[in-house]
Image 1 (cartoon, one colour):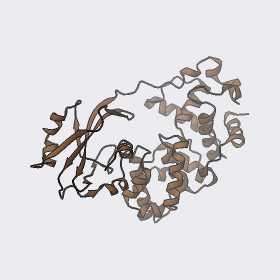
Image 2 (cartoon, helix red, strand yellow; image 1 turned 60 degrees about the vertical axis):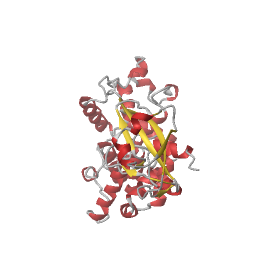
Image 3 (cartoon, helix red, strand yellow; image 1 turned 45 degrees about the vertical axis):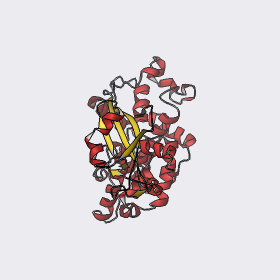
Image 4 (cartoon, one colour; image 1 turned 30 degrees about the vertical axis):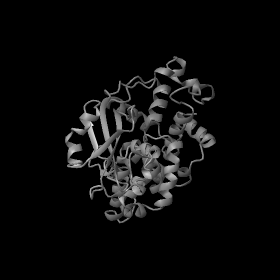
Length: 346
């Protein structure tokens, strides 16, 4: 039995019962694929269910306020996915008259959709034979065929895509793509793969050459950048505060307390003498207290954020107009959300 037939047969016998596998609705498949980028299924599942309940159609998503979309996405990270999802929904409704793109090339025109997502949706929903290559697929192909080309190079991306395209079952492209991904997620796992129960074990190059732990090859990651955040948790005499909406960066459009970003850890005196602090509390008497003596380290893929939260008690001001009871209704980053869950306002 061929590689593709073996995996499809295995998949039909062993696939997990996931809600997006019980439909070929392209909106639902697209939504699931966007949510599951950089996200484990157990983490992404509740978000998928929340989204289809709140926005059962692409039109419902398109007409929603961005803040509502971001609030539902809160905690999932990589917030550009949510913004792109919302932007593309509006594009489908307004420019495409509500008709979901039905080909690989048309799907690529959606903001935030790349080769993998376009291939997955086109094959699963419209039976177009386009190979979807994600981390699971890289791992399965690298191990089975013994490929040493690094997967995070332009050469590797091209080589693996061509191979995956050669292997795809032309009659069942959707089942084939899902089979390889499911196999990589449950059998040919990154750590402790289940080689004893692998239907491909007899012809796997990595297993026979004892290279399972070496494949796939990935070049060393870029250097981690360190950033130092100091948040000013304003608490006025009438129990109000201030939140600011980020204009750019990974947390664009999310809300946060006034931020002082520095090149290194700073003292209370340095904080108070900063321009941001003085502009916010001009001619105002304040009481400052460090709420997090030990820096909170928030780790992202290419940066580590060393964070301190400073409570600033101050007089009433029109600048501080958000009641503390309303703070948790705003979409915020996971870093901010974790702090708010612990902070006592009274």
